[in-house]
Length: 454
Image (cartoon, rainbow, N blue to C red; front, top):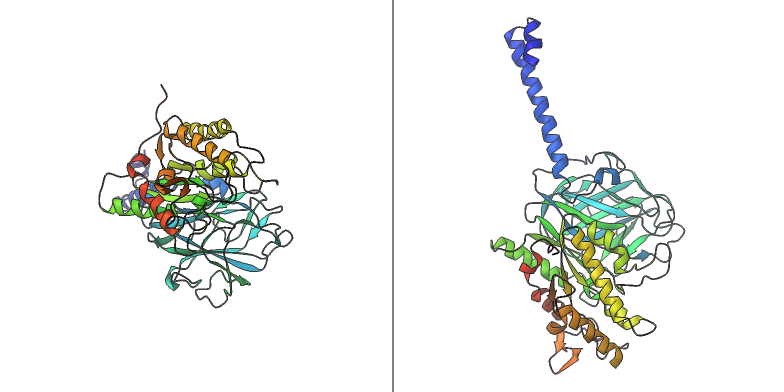
């Protein structure tokens, strides 16, 4: 039809060729845009709507295609005490996070889950840290982040927003700086209190600073930031670890990335580099210290929401999830006012598995680790732990089992953790114990779709 219209107008051949070339160029550009938009969301969510109803644009598109995967994530755990009125208005929040996979483009998710009023972010940035223990950035990696094409974004109370894609080469194992600035009081700050990672605060809008001079306040919290995704050639899916303080990395060395999830990510990275037949997955950590499977703490929304109540947000809504590792139950056994209901715990675990299977996700479940010698230990609770573990080991709960109890227990007193794995409180592993946990997971067990029900 194009040729007929041009020919009927009597256009000279040179003009015809020029017009045809322009049309072809336009078609190629449109096709490329459609392809980029499709490839930017392997996680299956409508990120355009989350970012305010406009297609993500960002400062620059990534240099190549790949799969969107989670490079880092954390669970919003509570409203930060002392921020009820003003939030962190007038201060720059520079979160430091550690990547489990590399990529050529990046996007973040900010949460105002515990806010009681809209959170206005006027500037946000992302950069690679200049070193392991600093708020300074590598200068040529500093990128402005946008949301629906704008530097400014308003996140409603209880809501979240995903940024546009920023072009930035992020390597595996990097410390990444994600900085936000809000000039307007916003009420309670959504935070994750047990980061085991030092982040930083500065007065004023210092989002674009590449030096650490203004960042005079170190902090052990992550604030607002709940996810960093990358467009990656290194991985084609994400493993989500859902758990309590033992997944959160409690009592591990701060700023050392010695959580068991960090060890698992390192093993997956190494295996992918060796060309072994193992899944090419990143790992994100959705542990919350003190978390229970069945019970949330008070509040609206609840502080420290139960594993059951947060499963949709913290697992199913993560980017490009392929497998889940569930490490929950010890706090249900230890902290119930009365002795925990074994059947309720097992029913709760099976409910998580059913929800994961409905999304085609494979579920690896962990046995409950020993806590003999801990303050909450009783013989009745030990019996409960053993009964839950027996059912988990039977294969009637999860697709496959990682036996963290067997990996950590003292062979001469199975009620207790082995002394060299114990952090000293008889409940949480130390760095050596976390390394052991990350080492005993069968990488092949993470691969494959959920079993089909007969």
